[in-house]
Length: 462
Picture 1 (tube, helix red, strand yellow):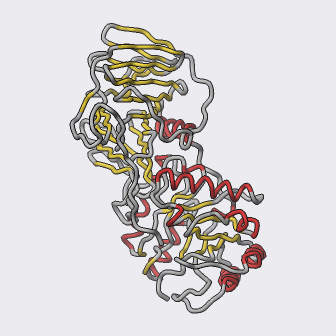
Picture 2 (spheres, helix red, strand yellow):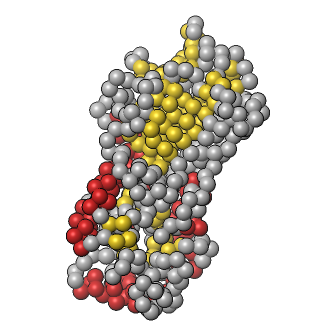
Picture 3 (cartoon, one colour):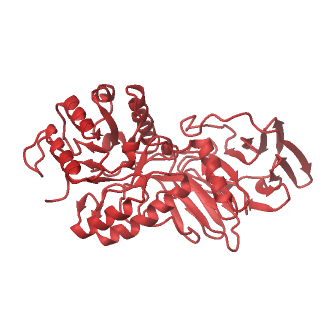
C-alpha cells in the first residue's frame, strides 16, 4: 500500500517579477553573442540563453530570465559525459548557426527563437515563438508537423503505446494508480519527426501535443536536452541518446526476473497470527507445485515488522529464492538487513514520499546499499519514480484492484513506458485488492511477457 499524495516541487525564481505573477513574458531580441568552444551564450536584454553541445546529436538549451543560471538537479539525473564535439558557428544575417557535423541549431535574432536542422538542411523542429515564462512556469512552443506523432512521458496509465498527438500529458507525482494516472512519469518525450526532448528538472510539467506543441515546467528557468535521431531507427536512436545521458536501464539479478511474492507474516490480522518463518511454508508451496518464484517480501504491510531474518533468508535460499523487505519507514537499517540476507528492497511511503528527487535518491541509495554490502546485484521496486530511476529499479504502477478492465489498461501502460527508456515496469498480478481466479490466471499469463512482476498476497480477502 502507498501513502496518499504529498505535494511536489515547482518553485519560481527570478527578480524581475514577483513569483506569483501570472503575466507572460516572451524572450526578446538578441543583444549579445559569445562563443566558448562547444558552449554558446546569447543575451536578450536581461535574459540569457546558453547552448551546450554534448555530442554531435545531443545538446542542451538553458534560459535564465534574470540572466542567472541555476541547476537544481546538479548531477542527480544527468551522468558525466565525454568530451564535447567540435563545433563551429556562423552569423547569417537574421540568425546565428551553431553546428556539429550532424546538426545545426539556428538561433534567430529578432526575437530569439531556435530551430534545429540536419546537416543537409532539412528541418527537425522549430519554435513558433520564443521561450516564455510567468512567475511560476516556463513554456516552449514548437511547430507541429502535419502527420507528426508523439510518445513518451514515462508511465502514463492506460496509454502511451499509441500517439499523444492532440492530447495533453501531465508529468508529475500524482499518486493515481488507476487508468488516467501518471505514476513514474518522466520529463522526456520523442517525436516521429526524429527528435526527443528531456526537461532537466524536478519540477512538474504539462505537455500539450496540440498545434502548436506547448511544453511547460513549473519553474522560472528553462533547461532541456535535445536529441536528434536519424533513419528508420530514429526513435531507437533518440531513446539511446537519452539513456546515454541519464543512464542505461539496470540489469536485474536472475531471481529478479522471476515472479516475486509479497505478504506480511508477522501478526497479520488479514491472515491470522503468524511468524516471519511461516513464509517458508508458502515458499514450500511454490516448490511442491513446481511454480517458479524468485523472491519473497516477508513484511509487506503497514507496521509489519520481521524476526529471525537470517534464518528466513537462509530458508528461502535453500528453496532457491531470495529475501526481500518492504521499506515502510526508511533504509537506515539496510546494511544490517543486507548482511542478514536481504536482496530486494521495495521502496514505499516514507521512501517515496514527495517523489522527484526524494524518490530518485531512495532508489539509488537502496540499490547501492545492496551492492555495497553483498555480492548481489542491486534490485529495488518503487512507484512515483523520475528520470534516472531506470538505472536503479523497477517502476511499479501502484495499488489497483484486479478486474478485466485492469488487465486492459495495464498492457498499453507498460508498452508505452518503454518509449521513455523504462525497461522494467509492471503491476501486481490481479492487483493488490479484490480480483478473481479467472482474472488472476489471465493477468499472470500476460505478465509473464514482462521482465519483472510480483503478486501481493496479503491484502485481498481469502
